[in-house]
Length: 147
Image (cartoon, rainbow, N blue to C red; front, side):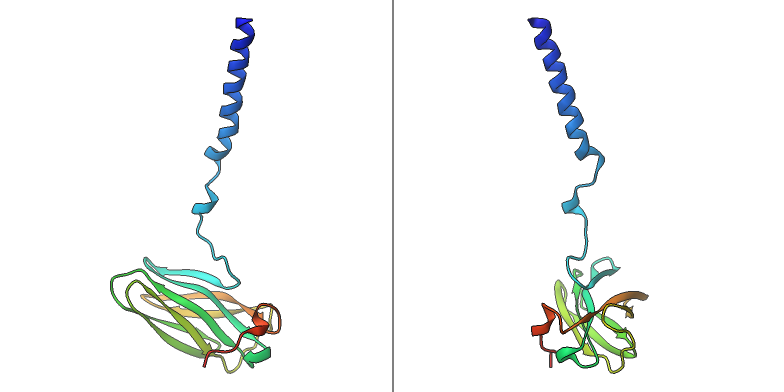
C-alpha cells in the first residue's frame, strides 16, 4: 500500500506541474495591450497615444467624420495634429487627460469597409491605416456628428 500511495503522489505532482506549465509558457492575456474597439490605437511616444481612431461615413455623417481621442499621460500639455484625406485638426490635451478628435473630411475616396490613411504629428510623423465604417450600421446608425 505505501508504494501505491507514493506512485499516486508522484503522479499527482507530475500532473500539477504539467497543468501549471500552460501558464508558464504563454503570456497572460489580460496584460496584453490592444484596442477593444472598431478604431485603431497608436502609441505616438511614451505617454501620448491615439485611441479608437476611425472615419464614419454615410447616414448622418455625409462625406465622412474622423473620430477618436488623444490621451496624454505626461505632466505637460501636448498638441497632436491628425490629418485624413486633406483635412486636419490640432488636438490640445492637458496633462493626464484625454481630448476628443472630431472633424469632417470633405472628400473621402475610400468606401465603408476600407482603410484610409491617417497622418499624425507629434514629436515625429506617424502614418496609420484607419477603418472607414458605415454610419448606417449599428451601433453607428444612431450617432450624430459632433457640431
